Image 1 (cartoon, rainbow, N blue to C red):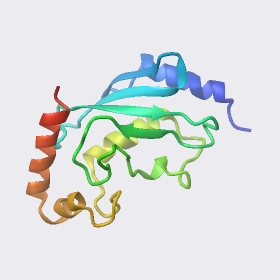
Image 2: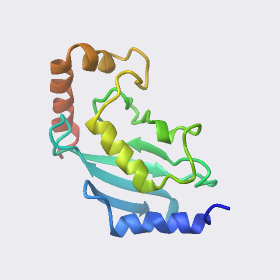
Image 3: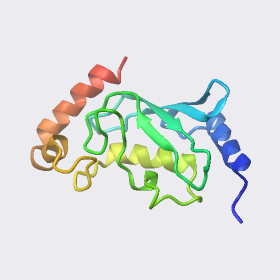
Length: 154
């Protein structure tokens, strides 16, 4: 049998006090243990470097059987993240989620997605951002840096 949900929620609080190095904030929204906020720092040597990206995390009632819903609150120019902040990431998909994943795994996966965008599997097929990433990387990089400067460095 899997671990109790209370233990999984305790792991969320553990991240709050011992976050990964690139996660500068991780906290519940008020007393609601199902809603969390996080802030991650953009990876070095990427167009997101030095940006602070805020995330909203919704924990479903049947967690850990189902994945959390994570969205970017900060606008970001990325082929796997849409204008509403929705993230296309395998482990956040119900079909790929396992109860063995932790919130730390999710944060690592999001950080890695910023480091290594996946234009072959964009949120929207043939999105302009994915096409620029694949065909005109310099323009993609310039646009992503501009968005980071405009929205993530406040």
